Structure formats: C-alpha cells, structure tokens
Image (cartoon, rainbow, N blue to C red; front, side, top):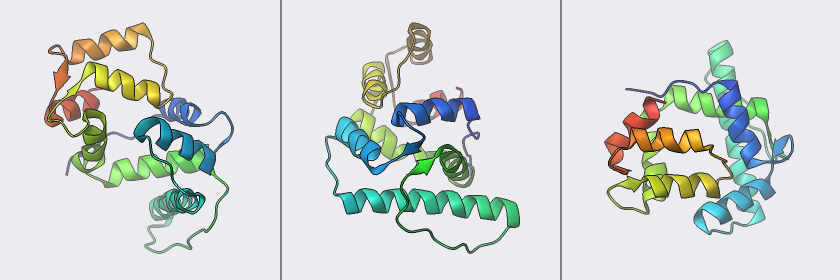
Length: 162
C-alpha cells in the first residue's frame, strides 16, 4: 500500500486558511465549499454530521497514534474543526489510506468523470476551493503536465512528486 507523505503544518495552514477566515472550519464554511465546488446545498444536519465525523476521525487517529488504542469516545455536535484537529485528521487519513483511494473521488470531481484532468480543470478547482496560486505555481503545474492533461496515474504521480 503506497501512501502520500504527511503534509507539513505550513501546507495544512494554507489549506485551512483557504477554507475559513476564522479559527474553526464551521458548517457555514463547509456549506460555502460544497456550493462553490460542486454546486450542492446540504442541510444543517448533514453539515453537522460531516463536522462531527471529521472530528471523530481526527480524534481516533490521535488516540491510536499516541496510545495504540482501538476505541475512542465519539464527540457529537462539534461547533467546528480547529487547526490541530484538522492536522490530525488529514495526516491520519493520509498515513492510513492508499493514495488511490484518497485521490480517486478528487480526480473524478475535478475531471467531471472524464478519463483525464486538464491544467485548466486543476486551476479552476483551486480557484473554487479558495486557493490562490502564484504565477510560479501555475508554471510548475504546467511543467509537471507538459501535455496539458493527465490520466489518473499521472495525476497521482504529479501529486506524489510535489
């Protein structure tokens, strides 16, 4: 099973700040993200479930990495996800899941279920996600995808090499 490398805190902080202007990723932040990326509107209950689930994943990964314990008390109705919970959740998932599993849905969403993703698709996804790319970042992306597009395996290789 090949996994992605854990992300550095500086990388995660950039992602976190692109998702929320505050100190917590809230249901409102998730609602905006889903609306921008997928044009979907979820109910308050669905968003709360998602926040709680993300918090429990982070909690589970933290307890398992520290105590090597397989059970943990689940938290219900969290107000939001703070930065350290976000770090624990993302890196725990990255360490425990194969790269293909993590990236398959992302690839299909970005490519709109086509067999390849284009540089333009990736730039549009970043913009909708609130990620501001520098001109240097855009040039690096173009150099990693010299044909201007990538199939799923090339997409994985591009991410693993960054």
